[in-house]
Image (cartoon, rainbow over the protein chains, first blue to last red):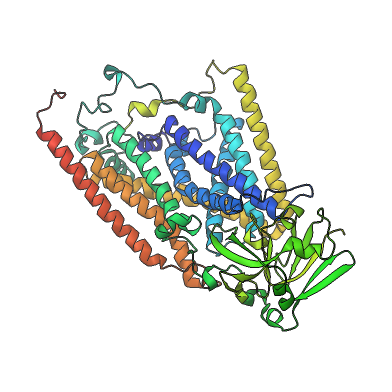
Amino acid sequence: MFEARAQLASPVRNPRMATVVGRLLALAFLICFGTGLYSHFLQEPLPWMRFPTRPAGLYQFTQGTHILAGIACFPLLFAKLYVVFPQLFQYPPVKSFANFLERASIALFVGASLVEITIGLLNTYQWYPFPFPFRQVHFALSFVIIGSLLVHIGVKLPLIARHWRAAPAPAPEERHPVDTRSVPVIAATPTETSSDGLPRTGGITGRVLSYIDATPALPARTSRRGFLATVALGVTAVVGLTAGQTVAPLDGLNVFGPRKKGVGQQGVPVNRTSAQAKVGTAALATDWVLTVAHGSTERSFSRAELAALPQTAVDLPIACVEGWSQMASWRGVRLRDLVDQVGASPESDFRMISLEQRGGFKQTEMGREYVRDPLTLVALELNGEILDLEHGYPARLIAPGRPGVLQTKWLSRIEAIDA
Amino acid sequence: MTTTTPATSGGEPTASTPAVSQRMRIVRGVFIALGLLGLAWGGFVLFDTVALGRLPGVVLWIGGAIVLHDAVLSPVVFGLGVLTRRAGHRLAGTVIVTVQAAIVLGSLMTLLVLPEIVAQRLGPKNPTVLPLDYAANLGLFWLVLLLLSLAVSVWFYARTRRANQRPSRRQS
């Protein structure tokens, strides 16, 4: 084990580097956790919760950030694991019971983190090859990860504190000759090292070991700088080449994003199709009406009646929980005006019911702050055309700062909750 | 042994450091207590929301991730490091690091995009999901990496040569 650790020694594998990469990774984890919780509570609010409706692109921003920080976790987590890899071969493997618990928590931390970002990535591809439900496990593991992160920070705190700042640069005479580049790095020749006191020099293991030992080391500074540059480039590449699916100015660089701006009916991507939702017949029926109810007061509107009401045009993004977003122009009736026709109070929350037969979001709830917002529409038109069936024809909801799954398509009924 | 530079001897976690102050002990206690709370809550949520029959799958994936990283990914990375240093031992360190960086970046992107290509082959649920030619873009990404690392390597190589040809003032 000691041998293994010596073989793995490298100028980048030190506590300072672990601190530098670790805090970036911790930051990315915390951003993912915070934005993830926000998205979770938007979809499943506790009874007392109210949310900001401005800026209108708030959810576009938080969820876009969630996905981008999540993808940045890949290079950062790999880098962190690379730096601390020799710790795996600690000898003796377990020093004490406390040490055993610490190692177990780190194993859980690493495993859960890898699974969390992997299933998150696969979810953006809408591919579910894992034998468990995505949403519930992604949510539960986030607490496991943040919990073990806190334990990990607690355990390593003295070490982190010591290496939070770089050690002051040593004076030239104190520095290792290799580090100052005053001595060219000379590769030790195989003949020198093969007799270097290694316990095993024969057999396959011995030959592999001496082959590895005879490999020239890189100058420490080059190695460290190269490592940091690689991590920075890795984060830049994975973020930069996918961010265009939500950050408009980067659209041109979007070569790996699972969605592309402007690709879809009427220039807007689609998540759930009419075929998946099995709404085609009901949505295209000529006798479709939208029923608005508040207590015992009910009114039904045909599409022509809705179109005859005062129309409002708004520019709002559709922002998906999977991280993509698309700005669009919507036209329709203000929800506020519609529910006022059945005598809704400003304190009423509403339930939106879709024509969808099944699916987790066929019924959603909307807090009063969104219902009263002047930007919240029952939209009839998208980007200057009659709403496409895939975008929720005959009528859909569009509100500022909400996840796409709550922008209910193929509306059938809007009813006040507890009225 | 060829490696072990002083940088690596920076400090093992030394629990016996005498300067562990009272405050540090309290802060550590708070972190660990909060962390255990988070772990417990995560475990509860998992049991509460995921059907019991699905839990072995979760455990299997977490265990599998650890094995995949520790037993497959890390040794491959280690081997690549040795091989690149071996293959380029007459070249300047900067050139070797450039080549290593290109391999790492290409592999990282491949790791993320390969499942995307597979998902695309399996057939997305609608044509607006995975609409790009990811395989071609990945090939292009590798090509750009190759050209860029080549250019940077040549630049480093030329710079090292120039530096070596100048009469040195620092070397003995």
